[in-house]
Length: 162
Image (tube, rainbow, N blue to C red; front, side, top):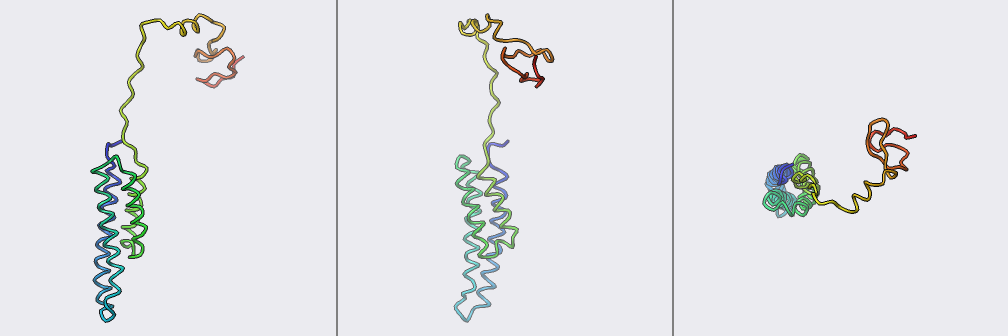
């Protein structure tokens, strides 16, 4: 697993670019078609431009600041949903932003493999007391695993014990 939400950021940026480009087209066409009523049709295109820019910024911030991936993922998710007001990037930009936003929210950084448990060279009085009482443990007749004296099933192989 990568140390940065690369996939979420790429989907968010591509979705934002599509929403932005469709918003620009919608703004131009809407302004031209409603020229005589003060270009009111272009307002929806401007909203698409705003949503696209915020989605692009959110995607790039996921890469720049992976520790705040959930915040930027949520912003991308919200503005991809709000981009529906201006056609949502012809559905493609909306879907890419939606998936990228969710992925950015749920992404977790990679975790280094755990170190093997250290071997204590000093005897632990609690451990020696447990080992010296053979009545508290027994071995599974099927797989040979050490099990508790009162266990009814082997936790390793699942076989019922006598």
